[in-house]
Image 1 (cartoon, rainbow, N blue to C red):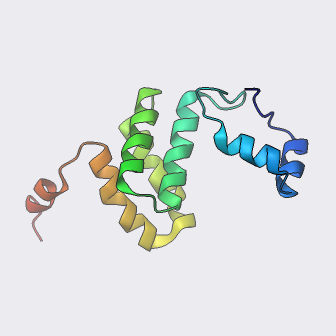
Image 2 (cartoon, one colour):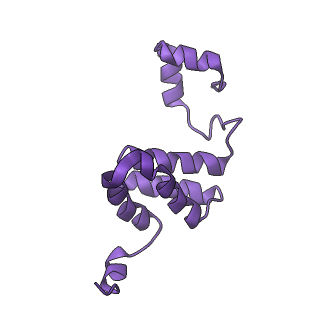
Length: 118
């Protein structure tokens, strides 16, 4: 499979709903065609941001976080990604995403909440 070049022509074709290119983009994985402009860690964090913005299901959070961490991202960078997209996604998505991201990072929120003095 040939990779899609990140170019103005690619944007033009996607904007025109070039069916072949759209299908190719949706079928391409990062393993098959690594981005020439983003390293694996940046791609992993971009996927985390996308899952958060789309209010993805919990298993998607786990897969995205595992991929980002395997690519060299730190826990702080994963959490920083959530904070970075907060102004875009708003408070509802932010509060919805936080426990799923915490779970994907291996935190036991029930135990953490019990230790708080409210």
